[in-house]
Image (cartoon, rainbow over all chains, first blue to last red; front, top):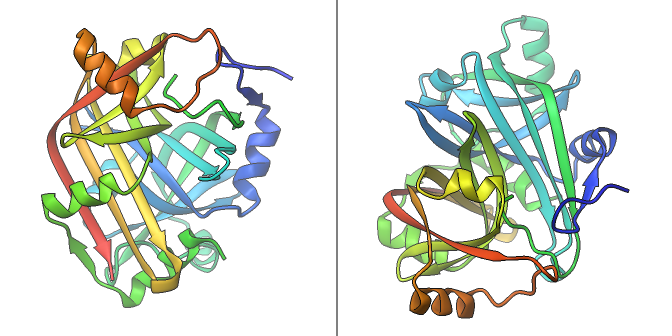
Length: 144
Length: 141
């Protein structure tokens, strides 16, 4: 078992991917750069073909911003009472899905996006790097 | 079904509504777990953090390390969201601003009293405040 500087147990890549794929949560937070500044927003995601996939609305700022962008995607499940859980961060490149077959698959797979009523696009983040930590009682999450 | 799934599933029939700054602050005050996005060596990072809303700004704790170095003095984005399964309701609030370390003794005492959660023994905690330049939120109803 590997622990980080705060005594939090580091998850292996395999454990990270298992958490992401297990459907424990469908919401992740997408972090990226827009005009040189950090941006963050929640999106509903699913794991598809060893990548993270989500919907974006047509003509939205997000749709513009994710074109071949380097992103960080954070997913966590943290119990509010016991302060236990896990957090996984994926780094990768986001790109719009253009293959019609894949789009159909993603339409079936993904929960509906937050944005209602607009034409949608599908984006995938290829997983270049993944890291994660188990959050144990007494060791709250903190930026590190 | 997770709250998040309900939130997502409710969207097609729901309406996205922008929230006022007052509503954003009220919602921020109601939670304690957020996610902060920052740049480290030119790479975007996202981390979950416990926070409190203190006098209208977000305060959280971090240990001494590369994240602290990356966050302090820099522009960050901070996000909090919540889905309410029973009412098919959800919201998200984002704060943009510059992060500053709290170092003045009185301010530090104040921050320590805000964030009383135990920390791993031997760790040096640092307290960070986000001086918000923009705050925005949306709700699905």
